[in-house]
Amino acid sequence: MFNISRMDLMWVSFYSLGLMLLAMTLIYLARFKVKNKVLSTVFTISAYLSLIISGLLMVVVLGGSNHA
Image 1: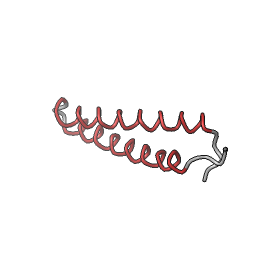
Image 2 (image 1 turned 45 degrees about the vertical axis):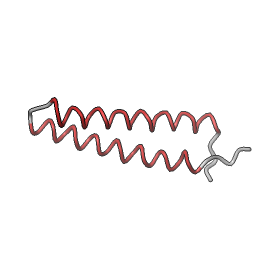
Image 3 (image 1 turned 30 degrees about the vertical axis):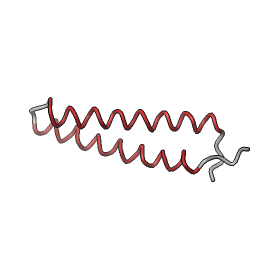
């Protein structure tokens, strides 16, 4: 589907997994550790943004490569 080499797809999948880990950590911090409402909201918004970006990157990974 995409004209990306397999090694580049591997790196994109690592970035996507890293963003998911970041989102999980930020949600944990926002819910349980941070008591400041403004900072908690900033953490939550950035967590959801990183989750959306990682989902879009997974579309690229699951789309695959044209290289045989």
